[in-house]
Amino acid sequence: MPEEQSQTTMAVDELQAIIQRCQILEESDFRGEDFNLFQVAGQKCLEDGYAAQLLEVIQNEKNKVIIKNMGWNLISPLVRCILAYKQEDDKQEHCLKILDQLVQLCNPKELFLGLLEQIEQTLGEQVCPTVMLLLQPLQTVLLKLQNKKAYSVGLSLAMIMNQLTPLPVPYTKQQIQEDKLGLCRCCNAVVDFAKPFVNEVVKNMEKSSEYNDMELKEELLKFCMKSLKYPLLTAQLEQLEGIEEHPFRHFATEIVDILQDIRELMPLVFLHHKGRRSYWENQEFEDIERKNSADSLACLSYLMFVQHFGINCFPMVFSPSYLLQCNMTHIEVLLNRTEESMLSKGLDLFESCLLRMEDNSLSHQYLEFRDFINVPQDLVKVMTLCPIEHLRKKSLNMLQLFIDKFDAEGKYTLFRCLLKTSNHAGVQGYIIQKIKDQIHLSLTKAHDNVWFTGHHLISLLDLVLFLPEGAETDLLQNSDRIMASLNLLRYLVIKDCESDNQTGVWTILAKIEKNFLKPLHVGLNMSKAHYEAEIKNKRENRREANNSNTVCSLTVSEEKMPAMTTEMQLQVLHSALFTFDLIESVLARVEELIEVKVKAVMAENI
Image 1 (cartoon, helix red, strand yellow):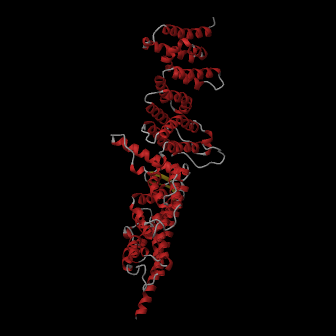
Image 2: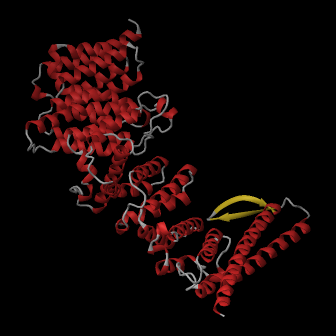
Image 3: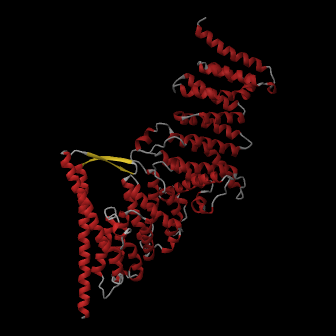
């Protein structure tokens, strides 16, 4: 007898011997040793490629009781073999038939635990193939369970999502089309897996308006919330050219539909501020759940108000300002993230809410809400710190749009807040320019208002027309702010006559000269002298070294910057001097205008 045939006979004979011994035992007499011997023999048959013989044993009616009690032990080796064989292989087909037989014959409770254990033990690239293979058997087993079905469904969905969560979410068009790990297909397969249980909840709710069995509904809600956080919060959800059915858009539609079917969509959108009952006694766990919930709700609002999933069931009775108020918490959550996908979702949601509103229609009273102060500060952080250019530009646009929506008092309050909280000279310069624009509108008859004239404006100018550290202020670092302040002062002096003094600038002229103009003069002289001395030193050092390619290193925030030659250093120093000259020329022009106006008034009074 050939060696291969001998091994075949040996593996199958071992299995048959165990089967024959167990056939004569009562079900209650099965011992732990019997289970172990059956598992080892069955696994050997599978691993040696004799699935056909194992299938015959399982299909034998005489072995039904044995398979019912012991068959679930074969799940792990069975899954390994199915995934190892190619799709056209007869051995894989035999293994799939064995799995189907086990689902039909095994004790549902034991098989359920076996399937979950297999999903839990799977890692890396095998996660999605394993989950997709076992979803249908798992669904069949769950539908058979009589006791604790809701708990078992929830445990299954939680286990599956926990296994999927570590996987990277495809983001680009190419990544989505390749779906290298199978995540796109797997997510949509999980939704199909959940549908019978959704239908069960819907059917029960239709039977009675006082449907009290909330456990299964609660488990489905948890699944939807997890799905909103992963993968949907991270996923690219814009429609992509060349992809007929975007897998994540389809998944998002299904999740929103489930929430609508179980009557949780509108409560989540509008009643989230009331909070959901916490199940944790541990404060740390409760904080984690609250954060996860905030991420999920932010994603849901994005899906509804930007991508318009579920918008057909949305009641069109709410004012744009109320919708903005409802979404500000979500916008803040998204803008506090650093990932491109989440920042872009936050900016898109903010834009969607603002575009619904008329300019100058948002009451200043909304700034009493914390979110309405925090969000513009978050925009400033994105504008100044985000490494992605298109997000920085969009943040600036959203800040302008946000400012435009407020009434005059709201704009005034927002300007004060941003001037006090922003330490970025470019942002401060931008705000000062916006203040100048509002003053211009206020000085025209059509836009007369008290917030950008008189004593209110004087209070605002106190924040603008001063140097934070007097003459020792870093003028180069603050050049954007200083230039904007000088341009504003020049505008006020030209536009507002001392006799009219609508802006109040002439009332505080002495304070402006003391806190801003004189320290600026001193600071410019000090800075120019310092930089001219540096230029002189560099030139002398260059002559001594007789090598213009000498380099130096520069460290900023503990990060070493690219080396600079002496010539490059000289260019930077000359650029700084040019900035000082520019500031000085505008300063001279402002002082000249003030002198002319003051002399003109004195001449009139003589």
